[in-house]
Length: 622
Image (cartoon, rainbow, N blue to C red; front, side):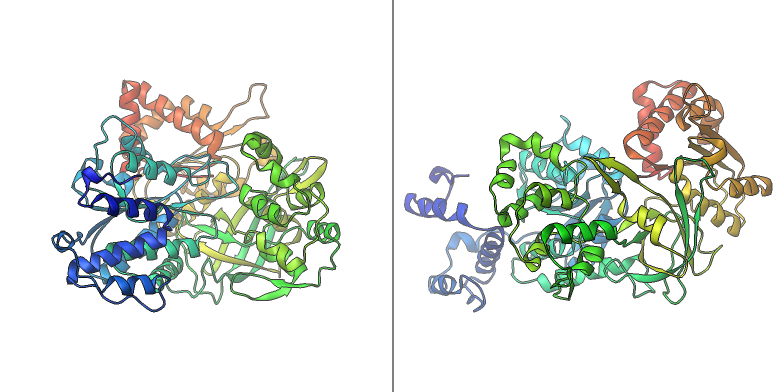
């Protein structure tokens, strides 16, 4: 963007100098300069720059000149900040709460809200807006950000020249549309005339450092000062500890929980293997509520680790960094427990290309080969990369620096803490498949299926999910839709309601392939039906009939009854596959509402949106 002399208070020479300087500034330098000029305006004189500043010499020279009169006349920045979050599993919500607390400690008046609870027409009244949002599935907004996203991209969205904003985006680089929702918001607000106070931060699964950096930048920009990184880091640490306030264990400090039970839930003859694991939380002070998730740090498959070491010609005993904190261990330990080796991403290939001995990998990253790169990444792992772009002449210590931290896997908790004190249960289906001529394994699922024996331990933490919770009123009816392993949280729901003596009716829709071999937790549901804890059960076993029948078909068959439950205040919960099942169930619910309520498609959609707004329609989909 070029500064035009006719639209500015600068003469031609000043504009020329500014146009040369501004495009060369980094985001951090822009923030520093903004704060420096704000200080000039507030004090009427320039304060000396910190000796630690990279521009200390230039800044000190600038203090010799009196502050321009125009700067002294500028109004002070508003101390009111609106923080909006869009979150499916609760990460952005926790970070938003922590950020707001730190801003309040510094004298800001902060309004925090989920995006679906904020009236977008109020954007024109806001001066400072901070957006924290995750990306769900293949570039989709999380459920509580959809309406806000649609509004901004609609014709009703207003011009926002008076708005200052910044976006924090959470995502996963293994997905093609990494941080897409955050990018959408950032781009659209700029198109509407809003001004960035800090560059958007796109964060991968290991997000602590970039989040702390973004916190520091926005707090600095809002304060008109520099060096709030320490405050920001403390804010992120506080957010990470928020999952279980009475415990010292968290995502960055997992508890090593002993495995008490590890059972295969599928019957003999099934082509699936679904594991039910029970872990001891004794001594951890960890607690949870129904709807929360268990984070599990797995180990990579030992054979894949050995194959990588052999392919590189190493021994596995070389000393390498295990993390960014500088802890060291053997290469074998690093590849087994600390680094991701089963997923290829573009950022990984870009870093690896700098270490490669041949130019072929760099050539694959060319823009015109984008589709070829996408096809290559799909279904391949680190061993493929090593073999396909050999030879490699780098030491192990350099090699591990390009790898991403091994992320935890999240599983819906399948037990009630009230019903099973100091225990946590979860359900995981083993993933095994062939790709590009080799057998592949789901990292955590096969670890749990093959190597997580009773007596062993798993590093775990609790991930609270405020967006998937039982009704506050235990007498409210609930409808639960969870095929396959998606049924896990509903075992937790019903155990909790049983412990509380809840009187509300409950209806479960469950589906899988075969009744005889794949009816997960069948004896639990049968007992709960007998005892009145579960009021109704509808099942769909897709491979037991000539025509495949799924849970959405059962929903449509029970259309009249289901709509009656909705009208009587029922809460609807959906858990499981996002790409297919959740979309099909959503469509079935729209059909039920439209058909039984005599509504237009638009009115049916508004009815379902309203249920979501009232937190009577909640989804935990992946």
